[in-house]
Length: 354
Image (cartoon, rainbow, N blue to C red; front, side, top):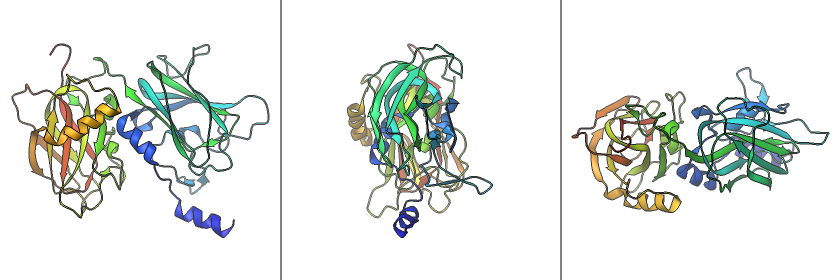
């Protein structure tokens, strides 16, 4: 290995998230996120690395080391195909939903990426896709670049449960992102629960800064189990404070906020507050509408006045009210900066004509 290659490996041991991916992650949920329950149900070949790594929420590493110290490629990589056809894998999405874009991440795959990729989608109730199912092309044969992150828009209004990623003819890919909107139904909503939950369709529209961690990680399911896997802004050196604007999965009445700062003990915010708005009449439907919402969020009325925060703790605060204030969006303000592991906005969804 030449010195130039060694230097490149040291500098880029861990992959970076491209701005395009950050933009799409802000506007849409990743339906192929393992944290939502997405999983690979079938694959034609996994000679060099398992397809399940496509669904890892973390950026790709140059090499993946397992618990026994073995070194593996961090992504899915097949054998070199020597006969007609192509390699493929079928993924059950974490939640059914509409697909707006396909993110293809070939980080660190420079001479072994597939030259062409296509993606199909279907809807079925079982985990495994039965033979003879009708697959809908959502990304036709598309040229792929090595060591790159590219999002291809999808123009399809269907609700899907599975996708099939086709590598033509073979090769490796670090990550797959299926950007879209989770299909929320009355059956999937709890009578009382976290209305900002990623798995229900809650999403972050924008934030002031996410230098050290993904802002969407705040809404991810489950407890935080590793340092650095929450939202953390850089140290603020100018007046003001950091913030994030969140679209709830469904309109509802909020009753309690849980702000978890586990693993953030010297870098947690000193305090926080909440603002909220009911934008049901606006029926936002795209990135332009989201931008307008974000620009107006600083003027929303206060839902919870500024409250102190403890680091390394689960901070719980009751949201007092008359039980009639319906919210669709919330702005979380942290003062002046810092890290947040998880945010839970507990309340009652508004159903039907409520």
